[in-house]
Amino acid sequence: MNIIKQFSKVILIVILLSSCKTSINKEDPIKNSEKNNNNISNSEKKRMEIKFSCGDDGISKYLNEGWNILKEDSQEKVCTWKSVPATNDCNMDKDKGCKITKPDKIGEERIYLLEKQI
Image (tube, one colour):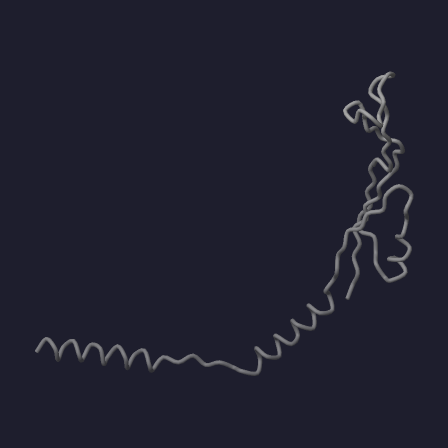
């Protein structure tokens, strides 16, 4: 008897679950996804960060290619280094421990954040 009750419950549940179907309109999701893809592809943008140091300036090349400057920053940077003796009686060729490296020329490093619409 218990087996018949359990079996009837299982059949009832299966019937109820199989009778519930959702209606899906197959045309609208495809059209909506195509519209969304077009909007995304039209608004895709590339971003890039470039740096120019010590008097180099190649930003015009990027501007001619259609890049736009979003942000520009500059900071000091050491362009060249020089070695000097630590004391007056130091021979840098024979005794490398008395050699000190100091900044020789200090320049400017420019950092650009560029953006280009694809």
